[in-house]
Image (cartoon, one colour):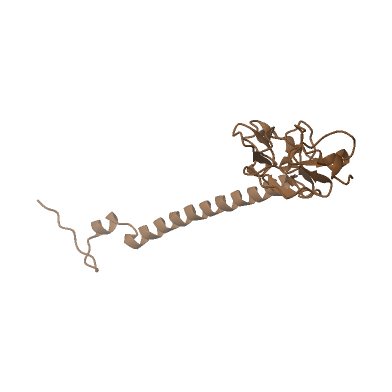
Length: 205
């Protein structure tokens, strides 16, 4: 036999009313309350993390940025290596020579010198006629036979300006020189040019 429950004023039975305490609206308030608490906790955690990072940067300072290798022009108008102080310009041939010329020694850094010339920046290296040979870029067109075959001084490998005022142009008999010899060698009673022009035509230093 089925038991009949009397209906209330709103058409629902007392049993149904007990089955949903607070109704649908009450459950929504509880859910919203919990979600708001979660969002507030996440926001507080994020703010705390940001504050901790700011405090860490303030205490330790920003990480220093190490500038990469940069080219510069030396006082003798040669290619150089710019030290990290952004003021000192040392000759290209002064890099990885075993002597710390820059204030902080970056011209001798292990990363720069571990596999010379491959580890050197391209602006520090000049290639000779023999692909296996190389020189520092400031040694090109300096009047001296650095490559051994004069390819650093003569075309077609290298195009250099004419001999400067301190040089005399002639086919040199010296292995050290190519098409120019220093003028202080002129008229010293020793042949330095294959055509003897250093003794008969060169006006001297």
